[in-house]
Structure formats: structure tokens, C-alpha cells
Image (cartoon, rainbow, N blue to C red; front, side):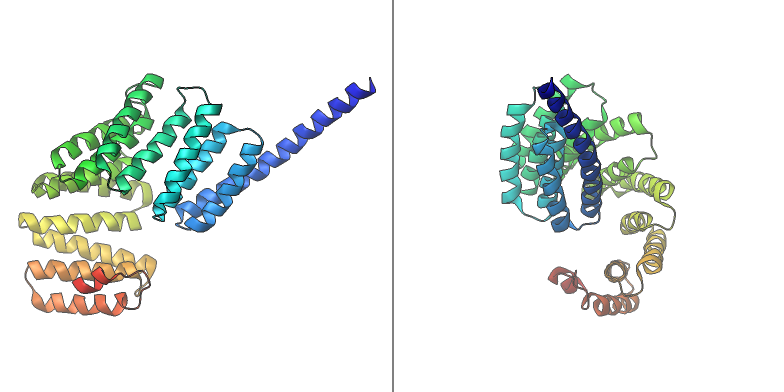
Length: 319
């Protein structure tokens, strides 16, 4: 009887410790995810790796793999592609050992591999893997499940990189159909896909067909983030760059100036993005042409970009 009571107390203690530990892990996980979203990848990786170690100790394999996939994306963002591949290989082995196929977390690992292939320029492998993930997700879910959009987006991006714009548009539209069906048209992912479709039309030499998609992206960004948000400013830049190509330069100018005003209001007069906005205007006036304004904004761009740690040589060459 004494042995049974001792074992019971041990189990209760472990359960209570697990609850406390789970709360700590959740807090650390949230912190790591926030740091990743803010672009603090090194600090995010450190925290998320610690969280993953705790989850692995608890044999919480599903959450462990989900966390490590996030770490992989952070490494890809830092161009630590070799480390990302090592982690993918490790997770694939662990996932096959501890999870039952088919499992959505195994597909999440494969999705990370697709993005790594694209980032590494291995488009043939990336496309084959993306198509495989799509088919396997369809077996787990249905053809309009929101998890499918990501691989359609990646296929669109890879075909865009290969200048195969028509195919890129088709894949992005498939992703857009899923997002609109699941979340409606005023969703941030819809805005991303609208912008991608518009860009492919622009690259294809069809600016008039690009504009409606850029306008939709702007509208969604205004609804989701606000009319004076950085996301709205980014949409104004895209629209400003395209209007002059259909001989509507006055509209292009208005959009670029709106973007500049928002960047100044949010980021300050001497911010990097304001410098790039001046550079965009300088380039715009070169093509109008209005060389006086071109030089005015070029000089403003150089003055800011020379002082910024984010500036690369390409920006200064163009300025």
C-alpha cells in the first residue's frame, strides 16, 4: 500500500510540474514567435530551440516538430541554408519515427523543404516537392483547405523566378481562391496574393491587367491595417510604379507621394524607407521625364541612404 501511495504522489507531482512547465513553455514560445515576426531571428532561434528541447523531453512530438519548423524558417530568413537543411533532415527522421503517416506535421516539414529549395534556386526539386505536398494534403483534408494555399504560392513564386509568368499567375489564383473561400476577400493573405498576381501581370508586360489586383491589395491593406499604415504605403508604391506604364503618370505620382507621406509620418524623415521612397520618386521622374525633380529626389535619397546601415551598394548606385 505504501508503495502504491508513493507512486500515486509521484504521478500527481509530475502532473502538477507538467502543468507549470507547460505554462512556462507557452510563454516562451509566444515570445520566440514574436521575436521572429519582428525580424530578431537570432534571439528567436535561441528561445525556440530551448522550447523545442523542453517539448522533446515531454515527448510532445507534434508541438516539438511545429516549433522546430519555425526555427528552420528563421534560419532560412538569415540565409543559414546549410543549418536549415540539417534541421529538416533531423526532423524528417524524428517525425517518421514518432508520428503516424500521413500526418500534417510531416507535411509541414516537407513545406519547409520546398521553401528551402526555392531559396536555394533548386526550382525543379522545389516544384516536384510542392506538388507532392499538395496531393498529400488533399488526402488529409479537402481541396480548399487553407493549408494548401502556401504551396500554390510557392509554385507561383518559383515560376515567377523562372519568368514563367502565366503559370505563376495560375498557381497564385488557385491559392487566392482558397483564401477567399475560407477567409473572405479582406484578408491579409489575400492582399499578398493580389499583389503577387499583379506583379506577374506587370512582368508579363500587361500593366493594365496588373492595376486591378494592386488596387485590391491596397483596399485590403487599408481595411486590415488602416489607411495610413506601412502596408498601405507599400501598396501605393506598387501602384505608383505601374500607372506611368499605361500613360497615367499623374496617378503614379500621387500614389508615390502618398507612400512617402506615410513613411515619413510613421518612420521619421531620415528613415531607410523614406530614402527608398525618394529613390522611387527619382526613378519615376527620370521616366516622365522631369530631370529637375529627378535630381531633387535623388539627392535626398543619397543623403539618407548613405547614413543607413540597411543600405546596400545597389541602392546607392541607383541613387
